[in-house]
Length: 69
Length: 165
Image 1 (spheres, rainbow over the protein chains, first blue to last red):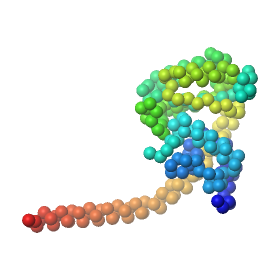
Image 2: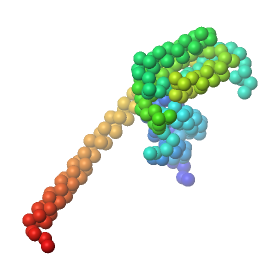
Image 3: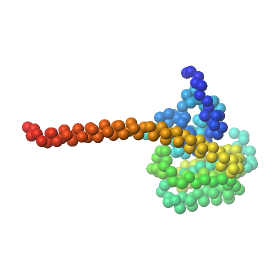
Image 4: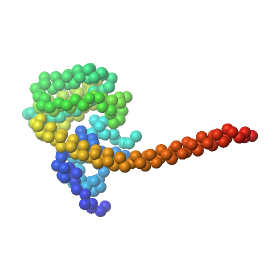
């Protein structure tokens, strides 16, 4: 995949990844609620790791669904 | 996992769901029970947030809705396992999650929240503007639908008027 010029959302806005903030998390999943790759969203690898655990935590607490209906 | 076995206070955050079969008042009693459980074991609650009744992203044990409660607390790390199992065995709590985190003052929490809220609000404005442009298309679609309805009515009229067969 080509490297995109996108910048990491969390680095640019200086915010921490939080599993309770579903509005932000929803940007990083696709229609089928799968976690999007970092290349696609431009998230840096450090934040991408945090993001993956945050999304999984949100799924456990029924804040995000595992699949689309 | 040698870290978790060290004794001493650590900072945790818990989010749990009280199922919808309770009324709001009963749910608050359940929440008070959990708080009491934490305090009795030497824990100290530093922050709490009640989210109220929320729709679950998926059905859990036939429950569509739940009451969410968030607590931040200092707790003896060796006792945490017991608290976790207690909550798991409890039938009054649908689901819970304990996360270890850095200690934050209430000001820091408020600041972080304000930041994300601002960001989200900004994006909402952008989304709304995008939506404003869309209604034209929706209206056009409605018009097309109306036209189709008229056509259907006309067709029916014709069919009724003429004695077919």
